[in-house]
Image (cartoon, rainbow, N blue to C red; front, side, top):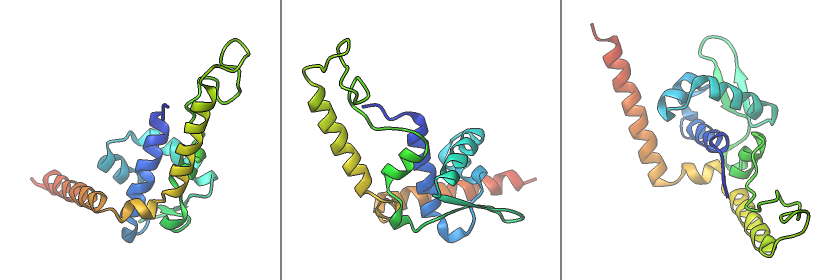
Length: 156
């Protein structure tokens, strides 16, 4: 199985929004700094996430993005799907043509694994992840680092 950077970054950015939701609209530049993700890459991802109805944009001063649904209603699988990713462990993309048009010996094993992974990611929500203590600890550390960096940047 290979989940590309696109899927990983989309989930990371959405979780960042979920754990920082009390701040109101979140600008992508803040997510980019906290998560060390390219701003231009985030802009591409958020275009897809917005079209999928997972985030809403807020224009104007203090604008940014908000989750379009409750964190408990957004599964990791839905985020991955929104950025056109799949979690497929088969070599053939599930088409059963693994060996020059025929099904390979282990096709059904990998197909079953793909289904289990999809079921698992479909059962985990941003709310579930946000309630994990280790996620809260990491988010707190990232906020403190961002705050300290802002102080250093404004020092004479």
